[in-house]
Amino acid sequence: MKYENLAMLCDFYELTMSNGYFKNGFYKKNVYFDVFFRKVPDNGGFAIAAGLEQVIEYIKDLHFNDDDIAYLKSKGIFDVQFLDYLKNFKFSGDIYAVPEGTTIFPNEPILTVRAPAIEAQLIETFVLLTLNHQTLIATKANRIVRAAQGRTVLEFGSRRAQGASGAVDGARAAFIGGCKGTACTLTDEIYGVPAGGTMAHSWIQMFDSEYDAFKTYCELYPDNPTLLVDTYNTLKSGIPNAIKVFKEVLLPKGKTEFSIRLDSGDISYLSKKARKMLDDAGLENCKITASNSLDEYLIRDLMMQGAKIDIFGVGERLITSKSSPVFGGVYKLVAVESEGGEIVPKIKVSENTAKITNPHFKKVYRYYDNESGKAIADELCVYDETVDDTKPRTIFDPNATWKTKTITDYSAKELLVTIFKNGKCVYESPSINEIADYCRKQTGLLWDEVKRFENPHTYYVDLSKKLYDIKSILLNVYK
Image (cartoon, rainbow, N blue to C red):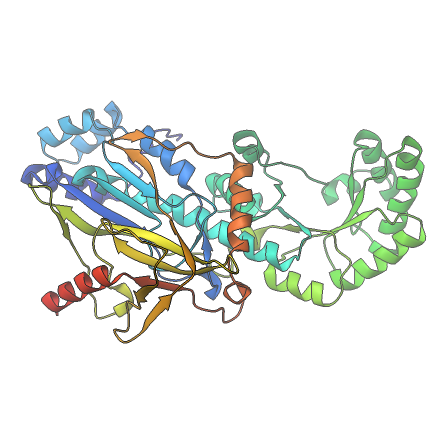
């Protein structure tokens, strides 16, 4: 069944709670929810925000149709007036978020919703699944791209993705993270991520000889073709036949851009052998592409071994983030507005200290060292605080009262921007190329120590004195 209206893509308890809010009059109250995460995938030092554009489109189209209302009525538990309310439902609140491509860290809001209780509650599932998925893949892609040390990385994972949207939106997120293209045609059609490809082993097997398969392909696609050379014997037939076809078909036409692809065997060894064979044949310009279950660790090892690879095609371990397949973003209530308009902070307390939330409607500031330009800390502040970056500032570790950090000679930037105001989208989403370029610049502002794959430096995400005191008071109330 194809279902275009995504309003019902929610957990059922969001509907039962909303029904209760309606009957109790809570639906008139404005509430504040934060989206944040507690741990970086793969024990990394940072993550890459992605998925906001899809959240925006969802919010714009948020409604319940006649079929939805009929289904809810059939459950026999929802108030008739609540169902009437849903017939005219639309989002009327505010949303603040970090732009896509922003480097983000645990326990800081990456999206905040201020809206009437029902509206804020009903969007929880879709907001989380969208931000969690794309942020996960963008983060994994960025790790893989950094491991490649400037070599091109392409996303090849559609057939191993978890469903159609996992493939399409995952390829979009991979591009934000730094991949230069995708094998997914639909992602190119929808989002403009460049799609391309080489050939499958089946193409070569269809012909009487490997040479005929290569020759036909180059005649059909003479502009920058890539020949798969490991169907039979990489060194004895694959590469020699590719060299022969490049010289017979492409060079006479003045075509000097072409590649071979290695998809099995010892990639490091074969790439070195291939490079020598190609160079000895006078094809120094021929590029070598490698694929076959690659990830950042395998690519890093290949680079350390001196592998002669120009392009990496990365599939299942990227599109599923196989080594760390869940991004643990959560959606937590942090404040409620009283009838008089006062913002009342709320906190979630747990014996597991990692699950204690940071209360209140907040701003997030990022501080940059003026000498190096690098990001040095993020600070969570109460919504009505402002930062004067001409003065030294002391920030407070939320987990240790005695641990503070004073920063000087810095510049401050507020991270959360307004996306929706009173139900109207006031944010213009950048192009996918602009987002990818912004992401590249953002990662360049991090110290190398934060970007280590193993044991990265823990980036400071601290609280302002005002927010720290509010949190302490609430913790004392509920201890």
